[in-house]
Amino acid sequence: MLKRRIGRLGYEGSVVMFGAASLGNVTQEEADESISFALKHDINHFDTAASYGDAELRMGPIISGVRGDIFLATKTGERSKAKAKEEIYRSMERMKVDNVDLLQLHAVGTLEELDRCTEKGGALEAALEARDEGIVKAIGITGHGHQAPATHLEALRRFPFETVLLPLNYYMYSMPEYRAAFDALMREALKQDTAVRVIKAVAKAPWGEQQKRNYATWYEPFDQQEVIDACVHFVLSFPGVAGFASAGDIHLFPKIVDAVERFGSMNDEEAARILSSISGYTSIFESPTSIA
Picture: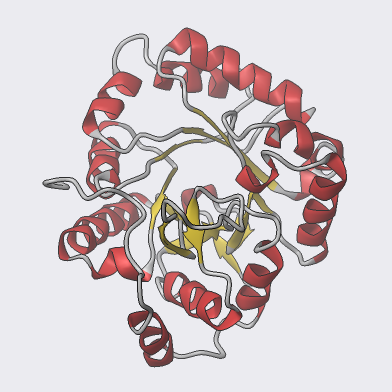
């Protein structure tokens, strides 16, 4: 399993993160099987969130037993200090652990959300307290949508977050404004040695209104192995990307892991040829009037 350093934290994490959103609505048996598969394939980078349904509960039985062998990250979507602190403690209890390697301020994809998190009495203060108490080792930020890169660039000006987590895929990076904003964030992240971790690598498009939803993801994912291979090649071709989260469905996970284990067997031109020829490939997020 290919590993990359998670920024200035120095941890060598598997480039594919076990995206625990996939455990939100599965049985304990299914969760155990998926987590065991990850560990068997030397995946040591696990990422979850308080808002992912029962994911933290499903992780607890196995994760608590291998806590010292993995990089464990969770998130709080609360915006006030008091509520965020409650959620952080709840996450520890649900996962049966005493600490996490990374606590992320979740879904901070606009400047308005960033303002709420960083204002006096905001969620950032809860994260700082939790770090002082030793239950959180590092603090990161996540965001969805087209404004995420610019928002996270501003976030790094306000506070030295150890990680950022935001969307990246072939289609979104082909959008000139998103590409410019993402590249600007990457440059600043490199300066600060902040780990850039990405999501939605295998997202194809929003679900159609009458479309049969075969997966638990809130968007239509790619499921053909060759296309997944190309998607994985694309995001991992960025040397500054520390890792990417697997899609939110346990049935796609083995295909994604397979693609990572064969990374390097496809070249940039082949990946671009495959991804540029796909009909219906688009952004899963609504386009704003501006991402600045």
